[in-house]
Image 1 (tube, rainbow, N blue to C red):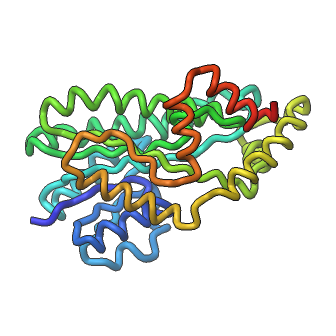
Image 2 (tube, rainbow, N blue to C red; image 1 turned 90 degrees about the horizontal axis):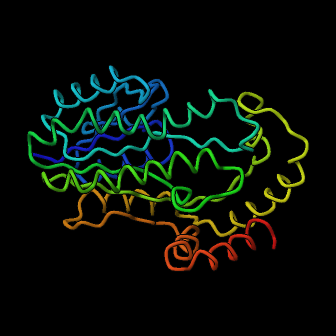
Length: 276
């Protein structure tokens, strides 16, 4: 029987690319997404099953898993890919906007995991892959809420790893980079929806825009290909590796974070983010 992967957030980006990649490798794919009308290509492939799944709606999570099992008979891997980044000044965001970030990036992933674990336990195997970010390891300017959600995702994944390893289930974390922010200032202000404009921060935001543009110049042109290859490696590896950092733009920061003293790290990031 073919292996089967369920991927959340498959309508665009990493999720759609991963669905195609796994299908090309001969896997069955449950490509789940909040709005299935956005898919124009995945549902044309015989071994890809497109279905509705909103990570904020536990009933839709259960329904997607049930439908996927009815179609393919089993699920071997789940990739928690659904998520988004809330960028901007912390003070400017409403409580509701902050809670929404956690509802999708953290609690949504937890609810998907909770729904699939009985199936994984029954078959005494399974791989849970949580898509984090370099921002789950290093704090970035104007990304404190996004940072917080991804730091929490990493801590949960690391703790969960031990209890699931004891029953034959693997947990993996994939940490993409991706520094390019071509519409940075517009996104910082939440496109007028989630954030208020606080003039005192505008000079800092303008400097941050320059910094992110410089980081973006180092982004991998083949970043998506590297990320989906890392997802596949995480799904198929027969070892206990927890973290995968596939893109070169974030690797220097991760190396400094994980190999330097706190003083060295602060000095490095102050120079990078504050120009000191």
